[in-house]
Amino acid sequence: MNAMQTELIIVSEYCQKCHIEPSFIDMLREGGLIETRIEGGEHYLLLSQLPEVERYSRMYYDLSINMEGIDAIHHLLVRIEEMQREIDSLRKQLMLYRSREREEADR
Image 1 (cartoon, rainbow, N blue to C red):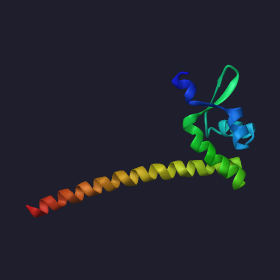
Image 2: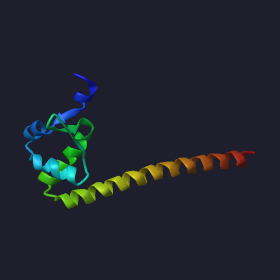
Image 3: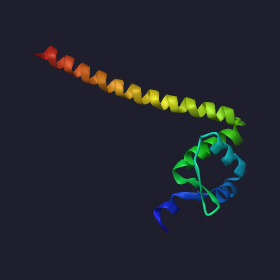
C-alpha cells in the first residue's frame, strides 16, 4: 500500500461508521468546505480533512446548523485564525521594539 492510499478514506465507509449521510459529504464538497477525490469510481475523503468533517458533522447533526450557517462559521473561524496570527506577529514586533528601547535607555 502506498502513502497516497493511506491518506484517503472511502466516503461510503466513513459515512456508515459515523452514521452520517453521504449527501452531507457532497454538500460540504459543493460548498467548498472540503475536497474529495474519485479513484476507480470510489469517492474518498482526505485523512487531513477528517477534523473539519467531524466538526461540520457535529454542527449539522448535533446542533442543527444548516449548510449556510456552517459556511458562515467556517469563514469566521478562518478570519479569527488569520487575526490571531497577525496579533502574534504584532506582539513579537512590539516585544522587539520594547527590548531595543530598553537597551537604548540603559546606555
